[in-house]
Length: 478
Ligand SMILES: Nc1nc2c(c(=O)[nH]1)N[C@H]1C(S)=C(S)[C@@H](COP(=O)(O)OP(=O)(O)OC[C@H]3O[C@@H](n4cnc5c(N)ncnc54)[C@H](O)[C@@H]3O)O[C@H]1N2
Ligand code: MOO
Image 1 (tube, rainbow, N blue to C red):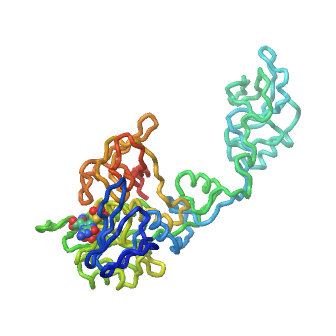
Image 2: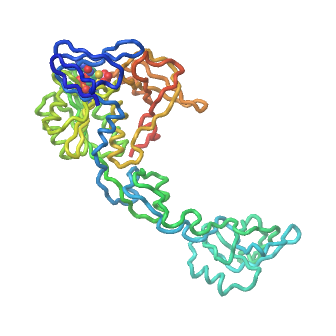
Image 3: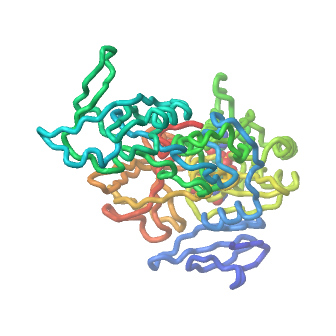
């Protein structure tokens, strides 16, 4: 972490230097840092008597998750576990399938009785019983026990029915010639080929032996995990509780959507953006009305929110303006800063604070900056608190379809359209992607990252990108 506590004429010590190649000097009581990249000097930061804790995204995630425990656990009926994270390993309690069963509708026979069978020399087997799925064990025993008479017996059997141990193969009904009685049920079957042992029978435990660890703690429960848990008759599962989050939009200029817009005001969109994003992540989220730029009111709102939530998220009021009070209000509410600047753009002023077991995120007010911080920082943190074993973002590689000319000392995150063509991801960065603009939200399905420094990135370059959360989930809201 780069920590700068800037006073008059201070310069950074060697130990505190930025991880990027840089040159620093001070004028008056301000610190100027220049990043040297490709021989070019780009001014990146001016701080005036303000403590700055600067981190990369990776470092930020490390700070956020370190010391932050996973949520409480609770036992819930299986239907309520969709999207929840398993809080314990799951071991198979019994063999799967639990009994030896037929995999086809047909006849259970003894394989050796069909040796020598062929076209024109059919083997005739006598059908001594019928066993359907769900048949009682007694009935199965009876059928093949006392009623067993000779070596040419067969049993009419249906998919999913228990196969008595006497029989070692099941012949599909399509390949036998039945001779039926008056009631339409087969009395005899003719078989014109040899049927080897073991066909169309699922042996008990052939899928899974008992005592095997099949689902690990930290797995998100979706449809396929349900296949395992429900197959083993689990009425409930032990899962991590949903993290509770309170969202506080901050700014005198903000108005609730649904009210007439006053001059020089804007609607609070970030409050709903954060709300929707967290809902998609399966979080219990409360959105408060906009809080004014007033330090005492903001402090009180943060304190109230912290009483109800594991995580408080503010948007706006986190930069260096005279009326940006989030950092000060956080301190007054007893929070310690984890970082106050992230090497990313947009979203450079993104900050995080910690108090006992609770976190406070100070997200930027600019819509794109707010959204980038949600995807890049808030999401992995929430996933960690949710107890997910894979809590980090899954970055992919794609080919840039347009050049990005703008140099940036930090990695630049650009709202883009990702499309797959002939097995290759292609990324079209959306124009006019200014931090305060919202047009790009209409079309974007990805965030592309342009590496720090240099002159941006050229068309055809391979760059990393992230599919936006609701795209990656196929629109699923939990
Ligand atoms: N002198 C400097 N000024 C700024 C710097 C800087 O380094 N030096 N950083 C700029 C960057 S980068 C960003 S990002 C913004 C961040 O400012 P804040 O996070 O304090 O946000 P605000 O100033 O409150 O608002 C910024 C912008 O966003 C609008 N906004 C705020 N809240 C909402 C909301 N809930 N929904 C929709 N839009 C919102 C607000 O009206 C402003 O237009 O600071 C730069 N300044
Ligand atoms: O951090 Mo800000 O780069 O304008 O969004």
